[in-house]
Image 1 (cartoon, rainbow, N blue to C red):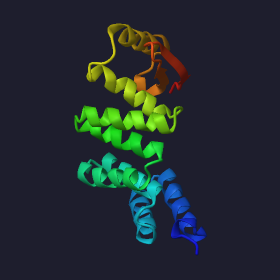
Image 2: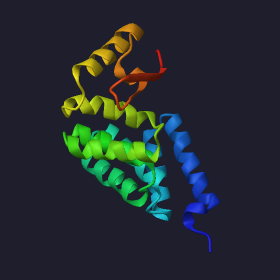
Image 3: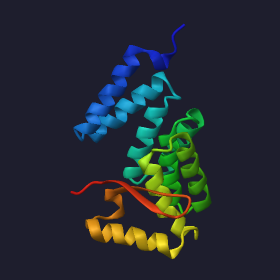
Image 4: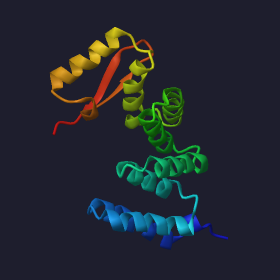
Length: 168
């Protein structure tokens, strides 16, 4: 017996939601993801995407529920952990955010959003020393970018490794 999440019709609903989001049709996007969740209430990508839409709209309560559901139903989904971690940072729940970012990196060591989030979080959490902060400032100054334009990792010895910089 096929699971609902393997259904071609469900795949089309997800594709429709992604397409509407690319077009900037927020009203249609929300409804499209809700339609997916009506068919498959534990669909991790739909939970995460809808959670991020609610977060962008300023509805942290709904975002927390949806992003938490994405982690609950997708414990091996690294991006779900990173998305919930970002919300925890906004809520000033730094220890929880750190745990979620670290789990995201355990699941996907290359996940740029988790590297970036953890690198921004650790100084606030009192973990990184002044040499790492200075290195980040040098990168930002040299490339004339904010931290959001740089994908980087912090090595165990505290070295900062830049692996992508996007100029706008």
